[in-house]
Amino acid sequence: MLMKIVQISGLRKNFGKIEAIRNIDLDIEQGEFFGLLGPNGAGKTTTINVLSTVLKPNAGEVKINGFDLLKNPFNCKQSIGIVPQELALYNELSAKENLLFWGGLYGITGIKARNRAEELLKIFELTDRGNSLIKTFSGGMKRRINIAAAMLHRPEILMMDEPTVGIDPQSRNQIYDVLSDFSKNGVTIIYTTHYMDEVEKICSRIGIIDHGEIIAKGTLEELRRITGSAETIVIHFERKNDQELQKMKNEFGELITVFDDKIIFSTDNVSRDLPMLIEKCAASCISLTHIALEQISLETVFLSLTGRKLRE
Image (cartoon, rainbow, N blue to C red):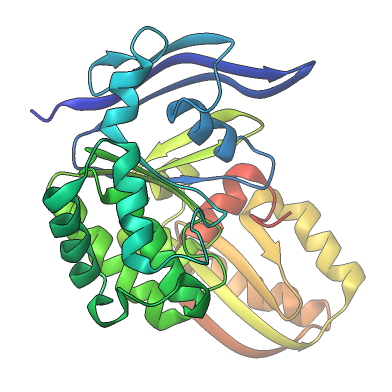
């Protein structure tokens, strides 16, 4: 049985009268790649900041690698690496100098620090740019060095808050590959992002947070079962009747989502629901152009559980 390396019980954090996180209970196992999803303002970053000792909770208990967060903050800090949403790099230093600087903050110096810096530059495919100033790097290269800096002291837990914002797909995929290797080698990763495809691709388990509470958690398959739907019917249309579409939304509630040019309907019985939807669209003078059946996506699960888009 794997060790529960992060244990959270009854966690609360207030900012004045605002409850940013409330009654969070969550266990994360060693080596787990855990995705934390939620709309903007749902409490993702606040949760990460509490777990990384940046913020003190108002109530609850947190254990990091067996250490109590409030009683042993130093031991907790030694166990974690933090990749913030904002880049924590010095533009006038080289990539290698940045890594040595952050290593020094963890007491890693001399040959040990230089060897580790070279190892990470190789892992992130930046060996040939180790002596280049950070200000000459692309956004994707900076993100990779930012992650490397968090891993210099070989933490057992890596906490990442929107680590791939604004970078190209090639850099994102390279980061996925490296993080996957870290996870396979026992590093626990807690990952917040706006990219649903990231979570579907790389996370072994997912927690959905809304209004400061974890409202659902589990594998993607487990979350699909929570919504009670196995597939989605996706209907693209050319001509629409807004009044009739609103009637359909009112009739089916959370089962149906209408975007600009498509209807997404969650179902556990395609043969029953597809003819009914086609008939209703025809009766409502909605001109269909394409129909597809898809396995229910994480985005559909998310919308079903939170009732709003991730970027709101």
